[in-house]
Length: 98
Image 1 (tube, helix red, strand yellow):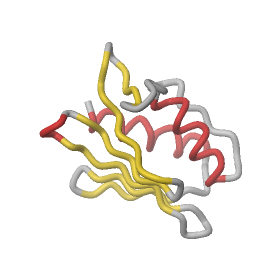
Image 2 (cartoon, one colour; image 1 turned 90 degrees about the vertical axis):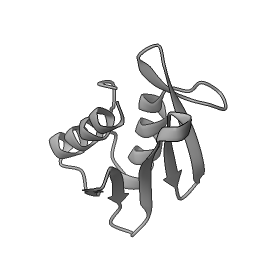
Image 3 (tube, helix red, strand yellow; image 1 turned 30 degrees about the vertical axis):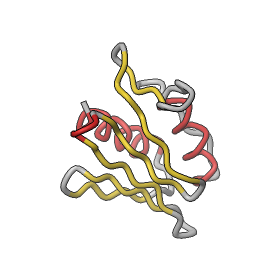
């Protein structure tokens, strides 16, 4: 599920022709803004989570009922990414495919 999710994120960014650069290496997706700020996605297999490190702090997502939900408040990954990456890219991005 993590690989599919990371591929979907990259597809959205490619389609939007966003200024965020992406690098996927060894199952770790790193997005870098023009200003050098990074968002890093890593899989945490032992706890079955997707971890996201942002300039604003780190968050953990659980895969529940066929979607990723933040463990602290159940916010969907799609909403979190739209808010976070839209701010970094200075453009509106939608991740409704997640």
